Image (tube, rainbow, N blue to C red):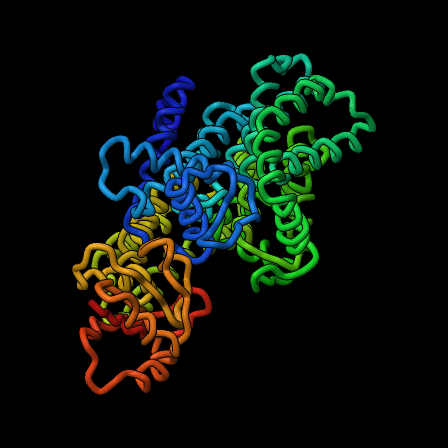
Length: 558
Protein backbone atom coordinates (compact mmCIF):
# COMPACT_ATOMS: atom_id res chain seq x y z
CA UNK A 1 0.00 0.00 0.00
CA UNK A 2 2.77 2.41 0.91
CA UNK A 3 5.36 1.28 -1.63
CA UNK A 4 4.79 4.26 -3.92
CA UNK A 5 5.06 6.71 -1.03
CA UNK A 6 8.33 5.21 0.20
CA UNK A 7 9.71 5.12 -3.34
CA UNK A 8 8.78 8.76 -3.98
CA UNK A 9 10.29 9.98 -0.71
CA UNK A 10 13.54 8.01 -1.11
CA UNK A 11 14.17 8.78 -4.79
CA UNK A 12 17.11 11.03 -3.85
CA UNK A 13 18.99 11.95 -0.68
CA UNK A 14 17.77 15.55 -0.95
CA UNK A 15 14.15 14.46 -1.21
CA UNK A 16 14.57 12.04 1.70
CA UNK A 17 16.18 14.72 3.87
CA UNK A 18 13.44 17.24 3.05
CA UNK A 19 10.69 14.73 3.86
CA UNK A 20 12.33 13.80 7.17
CA UNK A 21 12.81 17.48 8.02
CA UNK A 22 9.13 18.20 7.36
CA UNK A 23 8.07 15.16 9.39
CA UNK A 24 10.29 16.28 12.27
CA UNK A 25 8.70 19.72 12.32
CA UNK A 26 5.22 18.21 12.34
CA UNK A 27 6.14 15.95 15.27
CA UNK A 28 8.32 18.32 17.32
CA UNK A 29 6.92 21.84 16.93
CA UNK A 30 3.50 21.48 18.67
CA UNK A 31 3.91 22.52 22.29
CA UNK A 32 7.27 24.28 21.95
CA UNK A 33 5.82 27.56 23.25
CA UNK A 34 2.64 26.38 25.01
CA UNK A 35 4.19 23.94 27.50
CA UNK A 36 5.22 25.67 30.70
CA UNK A 37 8.85 25.21 31.90
CA UNK A 38 8.92 21.60 33.06
CA UNK A 39 10.41 21.24 36.52
CA UNK A 40 13.00 20.68 37.59
CA UNK A 41 15.86 20.33 35.14
CA UNK A 42 14.56 22.40 32.24
CA UNK A 43 14.02 25.69 34.10
CA UNK A 44 17.37 25.26 35.82
CA UNK A 45 19.07 25.18 32.42
CA UNK A 46 16.94 28.03 31.04
CA UNK A 47 17.38 30.22 34.12
CA UNK A 48 21.16 29.72 34.08
CA UNK A 49 21.17 30.76 30.42
CA UNK A 50 19.03 33.80 31.22
CA UNK A 51 21.54 34.82 33.89
CA UNK A 52 24.38 34.48 31.38
CA UNK A 53 22.56 36.98 29.17
CA UNK A 54 21.88 39.26 32.13
CA UNK A 55 25.45 39.25 33.46
CA UNK A 56 27.28 38.73 30.13
CA UNK A 57 29.38 36.10 31.91
CA UNK A 58 29.52 33.16 29.46
CA UNK A 59 32.11 31.15 31.41
CA UNK A 60 30.56 30.57 34.82
CA UNK A 61 27.17 28.82 35.10
CA UNK A 62 24.87 29.88 37.91
CA UNK A 63 21.29 29.34 39.07
CA UNK A 64 20.49 32.44 41.15
CA UNK A 65 23.50 32.69 43.49
CA UNK A 66 24.35 29.00 43.32
CA UNK A 67 27.16 27.73 41.07
CA UNK A 68 25.75 25.16 38.64
CA UNK A 69 28.82 23.01 38.11
CA UNK A 70 27.17 19.84 36.80
CA UNK A 71 27.36 19.97 33.00
CA UNK A 72 29.69 21.79 30.60
CA UNK A 73 28.73 25.06 28.99
CA UNK A 74 27.79 23.97 25.46
CA UNK A 75 24.01 23.87 25.81
CA UNK A 76 23.98 27.24 27.62
CA UNK A 77 25.88 28.85 24.74
CA UNK A 78 23.44 27.38 22.23
CA UNK A 79 20.45 28.60 24.23
CA UNK A 80 22.03 32.02 24.65
CA UNK A 81 22.53 32.27 20.89
CA UNK A 82 18.90 31.27 20.24
CA UNK A 83 17.48 33.82 22.71
CA UNK A 84 19.86 36.57 21.57
CA UNK A 85 18.83 35.85 17.98
CA UNK A 86 15.16 36.22 18.94
CA UNK A 87 15.94 39.53 20.64
CA UNK A 88 17.83 40.72 17.57
CA UNK A 89 14.71 40.03 15.52
CA UNK A 90 12.76 42.35 17.80
CA UNK A 91 10.78 39.72 19.71
CA UNK A 92 9.43 41.20 22.93
CA UNK A 93 10.49 39.51 26.19
CA UNK A 94 12.30 36.67 24.42
CA UNK A 95 14.22 35.98 27.64
CA UNK A 96 10.99 35.27 29.48
CA UNK A 97 9.61 32.79 26.93
CA UNK A 98 10.74 29.21 27.39
CA UNK A 99 10.14 28.33 23.74
CA UNK A 100 13.24 30.22 22.58
CA UNK A 101 15.43 28.30 25.03
CA UNK A 102 14.07 25.09 23.50
CA UNK A 103 15.25 25.92 19.97
CA UNK A 104 18.62 24.10 20.34
CA UNK A 105 16.78 20.98 21.51
CA UNK A 106 14.39 21.24 18.56
CA UNK A 107 17.30 21.56 16.14
CA UNK A 108 19.16 18.77 17.95
CA UNK A 109 16.17 16.43 17.60
CA UNK A 110 15.91 17.21 13.88
CA UNK A 111 19.63 16.43 13.51
CA UNK A 112 19.04 13.13 15.35
CA UNK A 113 16.47 12.19 12.70
CA UNK A 114 18.64 13.23 9.75
CA UNK A 115 21.73 11.61 11.29
CA UNK A 116 19.79 8.39 11.85
CA UNK A 117 19.04 8.39 8.12
CA UNK A 118 22.73 8.99 7.34
CA UNK A 119 23.89 6.32 9.80
CA UNK A 120 21.20 3.95 8.53
CA UNK A 121 22.54 4.19 4.99
CA UNK A 122 25.61 2.24 6.15
CA UNK A 123 23.32 -0.69 7.03
CA UNK A 124 20.15 -0.35 4.95
CA UNK A 125 18.80 0.53 1.56
CA UNK A 126 17.77 4.14 1.15
CA UNK A 127 14.10 3.27 1.53
CA UNK A 128 14.63 1.45 4.80
CA UNK A 129 17.01 4.13 6.11
CA UNK A 130 14.21 6.67 5.58
CA UNK A 131 11.81 4.48 7.57
CA UNK A 132 14.34 4.00 10.38
CA UNK A 133 14.84 7.76 10.66
CA UNK A 134 11.08 8.40 10.52
CA UNK A 135 10.55 5.81 13.26
CA UNK A 136 13.11 7.63 15.39
CA UNK A 137 11.29 10.93 14.76
CA UNK A 138 8.02 9.41 15.97
CA UNK A 139 9.48 7.99 19.19
CA UNK A 140 7.91 9.47 22.32
CA UNK A 141 11.21 10.01 24.15
CA UNK A 142 12.79 12.03 21.34
CA UNK A 143 9.58 14.05 21.09
CA UNK A 144 9.80 14.86 24.79
CA UNK A 145 13.46 15.89 24.61
CA UNK A 146 12.80 18.05 21.52
CA UNK A 147 10.58 20.16 23.79
CA UNK A 148 12.87 20.48 26.81
CA UNK A 149 15.57 23.13 27.07
CA UNK A 150 18.34 20.82 28.25
CA UNK A 151 21.17 18.70 26.88
CA UNK A 152 19.79 15.37 25.73
CA UNK A 153 18.51 16.02 22.21
CA UNK A 154 21.77 17.75 21.25
CA UNK A 155 23.83 15.08 23.00
CA UNK A 156 22.03 12.34 21.07
CA UNK A 157 22.67 14.20 17.81
CA UNK A 158 26.42 14.16 18.49
CA UNK A 159 26.35 10.44 19.31
CA UNK A 160 24.44 9.47 16.15
CA UNK A 161 26.76 11.52 13.91
CA UNK A 162 29.80 9.91 15.54
CA UNK A 163 28.34 6.41 15.24
CA UNK A 164 27.38 6.93 11.59
CA UNK A 165 30.99 7.84 10.84
CA UNK A 166 32.36 4.94 12.89
CA UNK A 167 30.03 2.50 11.08
CA UNK A 168 31.56 3.52 7.74
CA UNK A 169 35.05 2.82 9.08
CA UNK A 170 33.86 -0.58 10.32
CA UNK A 171 32.30 -1.61 7.01
CA UNK A 172 35.37 -0.45 5.09
CA UNK A 173 37.22 -3.10 7.11
CA UNK A 174 34.75 -6.01 7.10
CA UNK A 175 33.37 -5.45 3.58
CA UNK A 176 36.07 -3.54 1.64
CA UNK A 177 34.65 -4.48 -1.76
CA UNK A 178 31.13 -3.30 -0.94
CA UNK A 179 32.00 -0.23 1.13
CA UNK A 180 33.89 2.87 0.12
CA UNK A 181 36.84 3.89 2.23
CA UNK A 182 35.69 6.66 4.58
CA UNK A 183 36.84 10.07 3.40
CA UNK A 184 38.34 12.92 5.37
CA UNK A 185 34.90 14.47 5.77
CA UNK A 186 33.61 11.37 7.55
CA UNK A 187 36.56 11.32 9.95
CA UNK A 188 36.21 15.03 10.64
CA UNK A 189 32.48 14.57 11.29
CA UNK A 190 33.31 11.93 13.90
CA UNK A 191 35.78 14.08 15.80
CA UNK A 192 33.76 17.27 15.55
CA UNK A 193 30.79 15.38 17.00
CA UNK A 194 33.00 14.08 19.83
CA UNK A 195 34.35 17.56 20.61
CA UNK A 196 30.92 19.19 20.58
CA UNK A 197 29.54 16.32 22.66
CA UNK A 198 32.24 16.85 25.31
CA UNK A 199 31.22 20.50 25.52
CA UNK A 200 27.55 19.50 25.82
CA UNK A 201 27.66 16.69 28.39
CA UNK A 202 31.21 15.67 29.13
CA UNK A 203 32.26 12.04 28.61
CA UNK A 204 29.00 10.49 27.29
CA UNK A 205 29.52 11.15 23.56
CA UNK A 206 33.08 9.75 23.46
CA UNK A 207 32.21 6.88 25.81
CA UNK A 208 29.65 5.20 23.55
CA UNK A 209 31.94 4.96 20.47
CA UNK A 210 34.81 3.89 22.74
CA UNK A 211 32.75 0.98 24.06
CA UNK A 212 31.85 -0.02 20.50
CA UNK A 213 35.50 0.11 19.41
CA UNK A 214 36.51 -2.10 22.35
CA UNK A 215 33.72 -4.63 21.68
CA UNK A 216 34.54 -4.89 17.98
CA UNK A 217 38.27 -5.04 18.69
CA UNK A 218 37.60 -8.05 20.93
CA UNK A 219 35.53 -9.61 18.15
CA UNK A 220 38.31 -9.06 15.58
CA UNK A 221 41.12 -9.61 18.09
CA UNK A 222 42.66 -6.46 16.65
CA UNK A 223 42.34 -2.69 16.68
CA UNK A 224 43.65 -2.39 13.14
CA UNK A 225 40.16 -1.74 11.75
CA UNK A 226 39.98 1.55 13.68
CA UNK A 227 43.29 2.89 12.38
CA UNK A 228 41.65 5.18 9.76
CA UNK A 229 40.10 7.18 12.63
CA UNK A 230 43.38 9.19 12.91
CA UNK A 231 43.49 9.41 16.68
CA UNK A 232 46.13 12.15 16.85
CA UNK A 233 44.20 14.51 14.59
CA UNK A 234 41.01 13.70 16.43
CA UNK A 235 42.36 14.46 19.87
CA UNK A 236 43.70 17.78 18.57
CA UNK A 237 40.23 18.68 17.30
CA UNK A 238 38.55 17.71 20.58
CA UNK A 239 41.09 19.69 22.61
CA UNK A 240 40.66 22.73 20.35
CA UNK A 241 36.89 22.65 20.87
CA UNK A 242 36.66 21.87 24.58
CA UNK A 243 39.90 22.99 26.22
CA UNK A 244 39.48 26.81 26.12
CA UNK A 245 36.31 26.77 28.21
CA UNK A 246 37.54 23.94 30.48
CA UNK A 247 40.66 25.97 31.26
CA UNK A 248 38.63 29.15 31.78
CA UNK A 249 36.16 27.52 34.18
CA UNK A 250 38.98 25.75 36.04
CA UNK A 251 40.63 29.11 36.66
CA UNK A 252 37.41 30.92 37.52
CA UNK A 253 36.05 28.23 39.85
CA UNK A 254 39.38 27.28 41.37
CA UNK A 255 38.85 23.69 40.18
CA UNK A 256 35.42 23.47 41.82
CA UNK A 257 33.74 22.71 38.48
CA UNK A 258 35.57 19.40 38.13
CA UNK A 259 34.99 18.50 41.77
CA UNK A 260 31.25 19.06 41.37
CA UNK A 261 30.66 17.72 37.85
CA UNK A 262 32.89 14.65 38.02
CA UNK A 263 33.23 13.95 41.73
CA UNK A 264 29.63 14.60 42.79
CA UNK A 265 27.34 14.66 39.75
CA UNK A 266 28.74 11.90 37.51
CA UNK A 267 30.31 9.57 40.09
CA UNK A 268 27.42 10.23 42.46
CA UNK A 269 25.00 8.83 39.90
CA UNK A 270 27.22 5.81 39.31
CA UNK A 271 27.70 4.97 42.97
CA UNK A 272 24.48 6.26 44.49
CA UNK A 273 21.07 7.75 43.85
CA UNK A 274 21.07 11.32 42.56
CA UNK A 275 18.11 13.55 43.47
CA UNK A 276 15.83 10.62 44.41
CA UNK A 277 15.88 9.17 40.88
CA UNK A 278 16.35 5.56 41.97
CA UNK A 279 15.28 2.66 39.81
CA UNK A 280 15.87 -1.10 39.90
CA UNK A 281 17.85 -2.97 37.23
CA UNK A 282 15.54 -3.55 34.28
CA UNK A 283 13.76 -0.20 34.64
CA UNK A 284 14.91 0.94 31.20
CA UNK A 285 13.75 -2.32 29.63
CA UNK A 286 10.28 -1.73 31.07
CA UNK A 287 10.18 1.96 30.11
CA UNK A 288 11.31 1.09 26.57
CA UNK A 289 7.81 -0.08 25.59
CA UNK A 290 6.43 3.40 26.20
CA UNK A 291 9.38 5.68 25.46
CA UNK A 292 10.22 4.12 22.09
CA UNK A 293 6.61 3.76 20.94
CA UNK A 294 5.69 3.20 18.06
CA UNK A 295 9.07 1.58 17.38
CA UNK A 296 9.06 -0.69 20.44
CA UNK A 297 6.22 -2.97 19.22
CA UNK A 298 8.06 -3.44 15.93
CA UNK A 299 11.30 -4.24 17.77
CA UNK A 300 9.36 -6.87 19.74
CA UNK A 301 8.12 -8.37 16.47
CA UNK A 302 11.64 -8.96 15.11
CA UNK A 303 13.58 -9.15 18.38
CA UNK A 304 14.62 -12.76 17.90
CA UNK A 305 16.63 -11.64 14.85
CA UNK A 306 18.90 -9.51 17.05
CA UNK A 307 20.24 -12.60 18.83
CA UNK A 308 20.04 -15.08 15.97
CA UNK A 309 22.20 -12.87 13.71
CA UNK A 310 24.53 -11.52 16.39
CA UNK A 311 27.63 -12.67 14.47
CA UNK A 312 26.63 -10.75 11.36
CA UNK A 313 28.89 -7.71 10.78
CA UNK A 314 26.05 -5.18 10.71
CA UNK A 315 24.19 -6.70 13.65
CA UNK A 316 27.42 -6.95 15.68
CA UNK A 317 28.04 -3.23 15.28
CA UNK A 318 24.49 -2.27 16.25
CA UNK A 319 24.44 -4.61 19.24
CA UNK A 320 27.79 -3.19 20.38
CA UNK A 321 26.16 0.25 20.18
CA UNK A 322 23.12 -0.82 22.21
CA UNK A 323 23.85 -3.60 24.67
CA UNK A 324 27.00 -2.70 26.70
CA UNK A 325 26.00 0.89 27.46
CA UNK A 326 22.43 -0.20 28.19
CA UNK A 327 23.73 -2.72 30.75
CA UNK A 328 25.88 -0.02 32.33
CA UNK A 329 22.81 2.21 32.69
CA UNK A 330 20.72 -0.63 34.14
CA UNK A 331 23.43 -1.28 36.73
CA UNK A 332 23.49 2.35 37.90
CA UNK A 333 21.20 3.17 40.84
CA UNK A 334 20.20 6.51 39.32
CA UNK A 335 17.59 6.04 36.59
CA UNK A 336 16.29 8.75 34.29
CA UNK A 337 14.38 7.83 31.10
CA UNK A 338 16.43 10.01 28.75
CA UNK A 339 19.73 8.30 29.54
CA UNK A 340 19.03 5.58 26.93
CA UNK A 341 18.02 8.00 24.16
CA UNK A 342 21.41 7.84 22.33
CA UNK A 343 20.84 4.08 21.90
CA UNK A 344 17.40 4.30 20.30
CA UNK A 345 18.63 5.20 16.78
CA UNK A 346 20.52 1.89 16.73
CA UNK A 347 17.34 0.07 17.78
CA UNK A 348 15.44 1.75 14.94
CA UNK A 349 18.10 0.78 12.39
CA UNK A 350 18.32 -2.79 13.72
CA UNK A 351 14.54 -3.17 13.57
CA UNK A 352 14.37 -2.08 9.93
CA UNK A 353 17.42 -4.23 9.12
CA UNK A 354 15.48 -7.26 10.33
CA UNK A 355 12.51 -6.21 8.21
CA UNK A 356 14.69 -5.70 5.16
CA UNK A 357 16.06 -9.20 5.55
CA UNK A 358 12.50 -10.56 5.93
CA UNK A 359 13.18 -11.77 9.47
CA UNK A 360 9.52 -11.43 10.42
CA UNK A 361 7.48 -14.36 11.76
CA UNK A 362 4.41 -15.20 9.68
CA UNK A 363 2.34 -16.37 12.63
CA UNK A 364 2.48 -16.88 16.39
CA UNK A 365 2.41 -14.98 19.64
CA UNK A 366 4.94 -12.36 18.51
CA UNK A 367 2.44 -10.92 16.05
CA UNK A 368 -0.26 -10.60 18.72
CA UNK A 369 2.19 -9.16 21.26
CA UNK A 370 3.38 -6.56 18.79
CA UNK A 371 -0.20 -5.61 17.85
CA UNK A 372 -1.20 -5.27 21.51
CA UNK A 373 1.81 -3.08 22.32
CA UNK A 374 1.04 -0.87 19.32
CA UNK A 375 -2.43 -0.12 20.74
CA UNK A 376 -1.31 0.21 24.36
CA UNK A 377 -0.10 3.83 24.47
CA UNK A 378 -2.91 5.50 22.45
CA UNK A 379 -5.57 3.54 24.35
CA UNK A 380 -3.98 4.40 27.69
CA UNK A 381 -4.03 8.11 26.83
CA UNK A 382 -7.52 7.96 25.37
CA UNK A 383 -8.80 6.52 28.64
CA UNK A 384 -6.42 8.22 31.05
CA UNK A 385 -6.62 11.81 29.79
CA UNK A 386 -10.32 12.34 30.63
CA UNK A 387 -9.78 10.70 34.03
CA UNK A 388 -6.83 13.04 34.82
CA UNK A 389 -8.70 16.17 33.70
CA UNK A 390 -11.83 15.25 35.67
CA UNK A 391 -9.85 14.41 38.80
CA UNK A 392 -7.60 17.47 38.84
CA UNK A 393 -9.45 20.18 36.89
CA UNK A 394 -13.06 18.99 36.91
CA UNK A 395 -13.20 19.36 33.12
CA UNK A 396 -12.67 17.24 30.01
CA UNK A 397 -9.81 17.62 27.49
CA UNK A 398 -12.18 18.66 24.72
CA UNK A 399 -9.40 19.81 22.35
CA UNK A 400 -7.29 16.70 22.81
CA UNK A 401 -9.94 13.98 22.65
CA UNK A 402 -10.58 14.02 18.86
CA UNK A 403 -6.84 13.80 18.23
CA UNK A 404 -6.47 10.93 20.68
CA UNK A 405 -9.35 9.16 18.93
CA UNK A 406 -7.65 9.58 15.53
CA UNK A 407 -4.33 8.37 16.98
CA UNK A 408 -6.02 5.26 18.39
CA UNK A 409 -7.67 4.51 15.05
CA UNK A 410 -4.36 4.84 13.20
CA UNK A 411 -2.63 2.71 15.84
CA UNK A 412 -5.31 0.05 15.26
CA UNK A 413 -4.35 0.03 11.56
CA UNK A 414 -0.70 -0.30 12.61
CA UNK A 415 -1.68 -3.21 14.87
CA UNK A 416 -3.49 -4.87 11.96
CA UNK A 417 -0.33 -4.52 9.87
CA UNK A 418 1.63 -6.14 12.71
CA UNK A 419 -0.76 -9.10 12.64
CA UNK A 420 -0.15 -9.33 8.89
CA UNK A 421 3.64 -9.32 9.52
CA UNK A 422 3.95 -6.19 7.33
CA UNK A 423 6.62 -4.19 9.16
CA UNK A 424 6.80 -1.41 6.58
CA UNK A 425 3.05 -0.74 6.71
CA UNK A 426 3.05 -1.01 10.52
CA UNK A 427 5.90 1.50 10.67
CA UNK A 428 4.09 4.05 8.53
CA UNK A 429 0.74 3.64 10.30
CA UNK A 430 2.57 3.96 13.65
CA UNK A 431 4.28 7.17 12.51
CA UNK A 432 0.95 8.57 11.31
CA UNK A 433 -0.57 7.70 14.70
CA UNK A 434 2.25 9.50 16.49
CA UNK A 435 1.39 12.82 14.84
CA UNK A 436 -2.07 13.40 16.39
CA UNK A 437 -0.89 11.71 19.59
CA UNK A 438 1.95 14.19 20.14
CA UNK A 439 -0.26 17.15 19.20
CA UNK A 440 -2.90 15.97 21.68
CA UNK A 441 -0.39 15.60 24.49
CA UNK A 442 2.03 18.48 23.98
CA UNK A 443 -0.15 21.12 22.32
CA UNK A 444 -3.52 20.61 24.01
CA UNK A 445 -3.26 18.11 26.88
CA UNK A 446 -0.48 19.21 29.21
CA UNK A 447 -0.74 22.99 28.56
CA UNK A 448 -4.48 22.94 29.26
CA UNK A 449 -4.31 20.80 32.41
CA UNK A 450 -4.24 23.69 34.86
CA UNK A 451 -3.44 21.54 37.88
CA UNK A 452 0.13 20.90 36.70
CA UNK A 453 0.76 24.47 35.53
CA UNK A 454 1.32 25.96 38.97
CA UNK A 455 4.23 28.30 38.21
CA UNK A 456 2.62 29.70 35.08
CA UNK A 457 -0.65 30.33 36.92
CA UNK A 458 1.15 31.90 39.87
CA UNK A 459 3.04 34.29 37.60
CA UNK A 460 -0.19 35.18 35.80
CA UNK A 461 -2.00 35.84 39.07
CA UNK A 462 0.86 38.06 40.26
CA UNK A 463 0.45 40.29 37.19
CA UNK A 464 -2.73 41.76 38.70
CA UNK A 465 -0.38 43.83 40.86
CA UNK A 466 0.09 46.03 37.78
CA UNK A 467 3.27 47.56 39.06
CA UNK A 468 6.39 48.15 37.03
CA UNK A 469 9.08 46.23 38.84
CA UNK A 470 7.72 43.98 41.62
CA UNK A 471 9.93 42.09 44.05
CA UNK A 472 9.07 38.42 44.51
CA UNK A 473 9.40 35.86 47.30
CA UNK A 474 8.02 32.37 47.77
CA UNK A 475 7.33 30.32 50.88
CA UNK A 476 6.77 26.58 50.58
CA UNK A 477 6.79 26.31 46.78
CA UNK A 478 10.37 26.37 45.50
CA UNK A 479 10.34 24.98 41.97
CA UNK A 480 12.90 26.45 39.52
CA UNK A 481 10.14 27.24 37.00
CA UNK A 482 8.87 29.97 39.33
CA UNK A 483 12.29 31.65 39.30
CA UNK A 484 12.37 31.56 35.49
CA UNK A 485 8.83 32.95 35.13
CA UNK A 486 9.26 35.78 37.67
CA UNK A 487 12.80 37.10 38.15
CA UNK A 488 16.28 35.95 39.02
CA UNK A 489 16.27 37.43 42.53
CA UNK A 490 13.10 35.60 43.63
CA UNK A 491 13.66 35.02 47.35
CA UNK A 492 13.07 31.65 49.02
CA UNK A 493 11.69 32.37 52.50
CA UNK A 494 9.75 30.73 55.32
CA UNK A 495 6.19 31.47 56.37
CA UNK A 496 7.47 33.49 59.29
CA UNK A 497 9.42 35.81 56.97
CA UNK A 498 6.55 36.67 54.62
CA UNK A 499 5.24 39.66 56.59
CA UNK A 500 8.70 41.21 56.88
CA UNK A 501 9.26 40.75 53.15
CA UNK A 502 5.94 42.35 52.19
CA UNK A 503 6.61 45.25 54.55
CA UNK A 504 9.98 45.92 52.90
CA UNK A 505 11.19 49.20 51.50
CA UNK A 506 8.44 51.80 51.30
CA UNK A 507 7.29 52.36 47.74
CA UNK A 508 8.24 48.88 46.54
CA UNK A 509 5.64 46.63 44.96
CA UNK A 510 6.04 43.19 46.51
CA UNK A 511 4.52 39.81 45.70
CA UNK A 512 4.73 36.73 47.95
CA UNK A 513 3.62 33.23 46.95
CA UNK A 514 2.69 31.46 50.18
CA UNK A 515 1.81 27.77 50.29
CA UNK A 516 -1.09 27.00 52.64
CA UNK A 517 1.05 25.24 55.26
CA UNK A 518 3.38 28.24 55.47
CA UNK A 519 0.45 30.64 55.29
CA UNK A 520 -0.73 29.68 58.77
CA UNK A 521 2.33 31.23 60.42
CA UNK A 522 2.11 34.30 58.16
CA UNK A 523 -1.58 34.92 58.95
CA UNK A 524 -1.00 34.76 62.70
CA UNK A 525 1.44 37.66 62.31
CA UNK A 526 -0.78 39.68 60.00
CA UNK A 527 -2.19 42.72 61.81
CA UNK A 528 -5.95 43.20 61.94
CA UNK A 529 -5.62 46.25 59.71
CA UNK A 530 -2.82 45.92 57.15
CA UNK A 531 -1.83 48.81 54.97
CA UNK A 532 -1.86 48.02 51.27
CA UNK A 533 -1.60 44.26 51.73
CA UNK A 534 -4.11 42.00 49.99
CA UNK A 535 -4.68 38.49 48.72
CA UNK A 536 -4.69 38.74 44.92
CA UNK A 537 -5.85 35.17 44.42
CA UNK A 538 -5.20 31.51 45.09
CA UNK A 539 -3.68 28.89 42.82
CA UNK A 540 -4.38 25.22 43.43
CA UNK A 541 -2.80 22.26 41.71
CA UNK A 542 -0.42 19.33 41.79
CA UNK A 543 3.34 19.57 42.04
CA UNK A 544 4.54 17.29 39.23
CA UNK A 545 7.60 16.50 41.35
CA UNK A 546 6.14 14.18 43.95
CA UNK A 547 2.46 14.64 43.09
CA UNK A 548 1.63 16.63 46.25
CA UNK A 549 -1.53 18.81 46.06
CA UNK A 550 -0.77 22.46 46.77
CA UNK A 551 -2.84 25.52 47.62
CA UNK A 552 -0.84 28.73 47.22
CA UNK A 553 -1.94 32.26 48.09
CA UNK A 554 -0.62 35.20 46.06
CA UNK A 555 -0.17 38.14 48.44
CA UNK A 556 0.60 41.64 47.19
CA UNK A 557 1.80 44.80 48.94
CA UNK A 558 1.93 48.00 46.87
